[in-house]
Length: 302
Image (cartoon, rainbow, N blue to C red; front, side, top):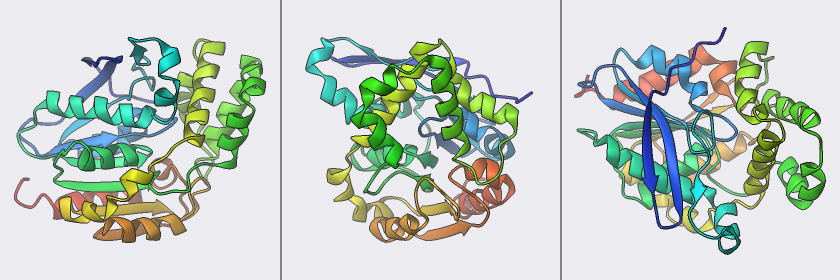
């Protein structure tokens, strides 16, 4: 059985248009340096379980599920949806970053946290830094969605044929979800891990299926052009490391070098025999690289 940390606390954030209920938890000593893990799509804080546990002896760790992911319920619209379809589409990531910025402020950490992000959690963390002026002690980006062009061909296929995909019975969508999850690693995922990562998108039958397909449509319409114009500032705002799986089938490894240059990142490491989910393909090598990075930028803290 796969062990998961219990997200035993709830943060409620309300704006004029939306309400968010974000489930989160904290590990380690409150006197240790703060470290926040940010997950991407279609994942949850579950992808950080082993890494967070191994680092919790030295860091004050924060884990959370974005609204609509893991065990956090989807955000709730407080206004007529017809007026906000496009906002919810492009940019659920903009809204996600706003909610995460509010969560960071709620945590009221004594000193700037270290941040480790994966997948489109990378865009969220960059928005925190550039749009919301959240200060980081360091930033580590792992196989992140951050620089265009975005999207797998599958995203385009779903977005252009949304009616067809939403008509597919839930039991057949389950096959799509599982295939999508399995394509994120270059090694075979243990069945229990596959089940854990797929479960949030399969719960509730058709409702879970619709949620998964909606995320695919959103991914196709993603746009970070304005944000990318600010990327040159990142290296000066926070020391930044990029880690990438050599066999990433979702985002080509060549993207890592482009991103390093765009962000003025300090360091880039390519991990062999690893796909998009380095957490499961090479957990030991990932832990080593993240640990070395955090140690380098925590010398006066630990």
